[in-house]
Length: 110
Image (tube, rainbow, N blue to C red; front, side, top):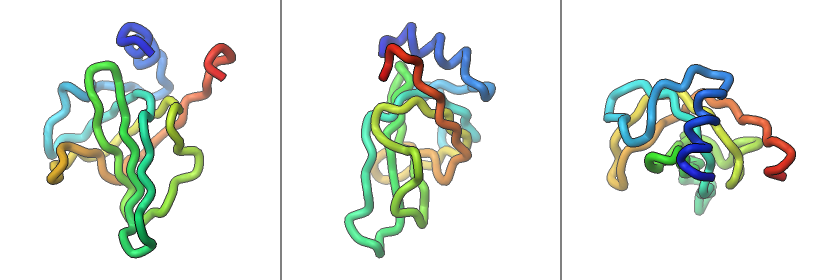
């Protein structure tokens, strides 16, 4: 998806998406919209976090659900709006335990 297509999709998202990944900062509430580029499953049941990488055309950010082994409907390639707190971790910024909304795909994307 091109940056222009992502901008149009962000404007048409059901939630009011106010942030771009390139603009978010630590300890800030963010509302982001993009495409999931990858999903990382926990290596063991003890690790207890499920993560995905969200790309919005301006950059990527990790989205993490603590205490989860998976999240139904979350898979690479879907469009996703997330809203939550941005924190800093050793590997960069991430959004922890966000509220989220999966966007339906249009026919030409299937």
